[in-house]
Length: 278
Image (cartoon, rainbow, N blue to C red; front, top):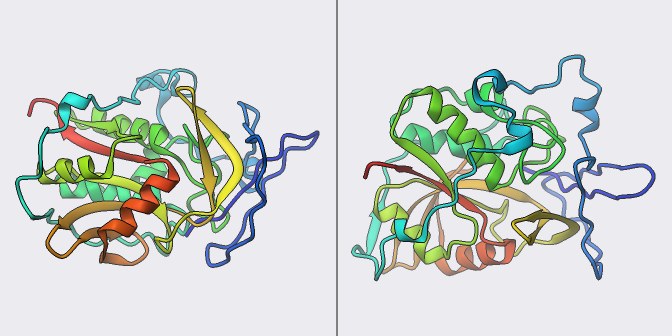
């Protein structure tokens, strides 16, 4: 679904994209390449007469400068102790990103999570009207989810996007950034009927990390090959499996430990949506 891009901080900043079905060999570096505000931009979107940037900043302020809606989830919001249920499943409908959003897994996974919460929105609404676009994958979608050479967006930016949408709905639901939260705690959120969006790989195998790193709260997170985003919607401890609403594959059952290992290796990238009054 995704294309790997590497940002080279040289005289000319270049964006390189690789097909999601290809696995390009990645070279390692002693120090990460850390792009700043002038990092890579999609060549396709840069040449558009009307680049896709549809968030209404006149209503919400300059998100590109302040990102006020990236809310980290308080540790006290996650129930302590063991899971109460050995199995739990959220009732969610399959939602496929193709053909409209070939690299839009993040916006489609978020849409599936919102639809589970009974919000009425179409598959392309988030990407067309609420997703922010820019040059830093930590905060904005880099490239075009409507094109095959799109890159992606990480949890802080998608959390912002979700909260931009939720504020228009006059709801008690709030999206929270759960980067760094252990996989077991994500299952507790599911048990409490909170949809969880997680970053994984297209094939659910260990990620091949790129040299490109992005800084968030004094930590580095690496872009990686076959970047993918899905709605984690269930688990079965007896079978050792989790259920995924995958924008590419639909509802699938996967090995819990393998999913956890991939999640940990990527850097524990995830977000959730909770009722703030619950």
